[in-house]
Image 1 (cartoon, one colour):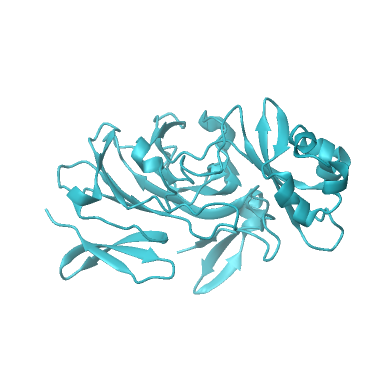
Image 2 (cartoon, rainbow, N blue to C red; image 1 turned 60 degrees about the vertical axis):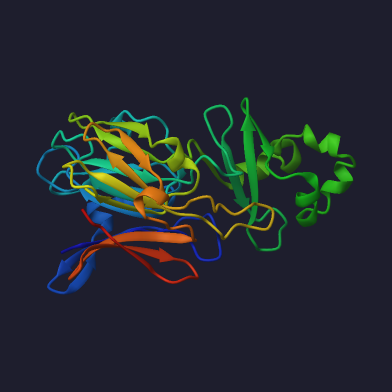
Length: 331
């Protein structure tokens, strides 16, 4: 088996991404073939968090799909020689997000592999959308050889600082002199505050959606994005298990995730309790509450895994800073 290693970030320099690797297994020794086979993975355009292999175009070869932070879900078609980025031909809307997890399954029983993708969710202090995109500029704005982050909210085409004068003034002393009142600062754009020239040199990202979705395979080499039910959007989805939980012949989803590691001025995302989404085999999912399903994962969940044991199938819940949880699946 060969190996794909997704690159996330340059240590100590968030959100600067790093390259990914495609490694060929040469009898137990791995050779880096990325530059010759998949050169676009050298500059993935975001910080990769997960990937999946599936034949999304029906040519009999496994293709690669990646997801990550500040980036869209990206599709790489395998032509037998190279992996080519074909994301633009998927007919999907702009989907830059904070993607955590990718899983594969046939959710509408048409014989084609679909995808489900866990995102930040729609219950966070960070919000984004077509008319109000959340973004970030990263650069050494203060000249002290450290990376400064300026989070932004774009409103009607103009970007404003996400945080107010009181907070930004702690890092940028001159702001309180230039903007002696909160009213004066409130109407200033990021370009006015930090200067267009400095921002042009900065690393700049924006997000289009924070909704968790499933991607329907249309069978013609394209996909359609469909949001998961509203209750699945109340927290980040950082772990997904695809399985027919109730034995009705249709794939279901078990999802969980929270995010505790926020900076002091942002509330942590902790509304998630774990959720069973019962599939109907036609692409719709019905939420089943933890009280009915028995699946309760309310902690700082990092991932889920389905494993076979002598006692049957067990869902493992990996919690950050807490014990591993285990749930048996019964019928």
